[in-house]
Image 1 (cartoon, rainbow, N blue to C red):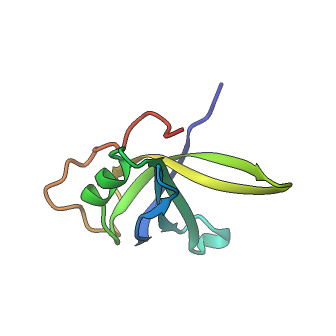
Image 2: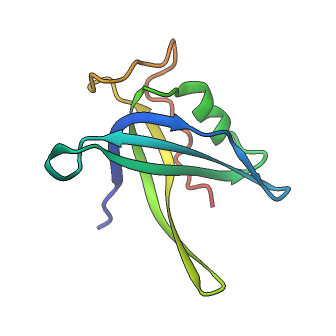
Length: 121
């Protein structure tokens, strides 16, 4: 049985989308919450990676903003390149979190707009 990885927090920063070669682009955003040791703030960096003709990055930017409370479903990925290993948190679904008091809701956006339920690779 697989467990869904999910974080609830507030979007701290949304970075500008980056081009990767001619075919792909990615967006990195950070989420904070108080899940750290003794309630300390914890920071998570997520990425959305897709082919250039995809809609995930555009939908994320359209329905989310800094300071917004969200639930992020993600996958932990590890890739190897020339004997070095890189781990990333790949977001595949982002929902506005109406129950959290800290953030402001996205204006007139559907609260449960999904980026896409299909993993981008």
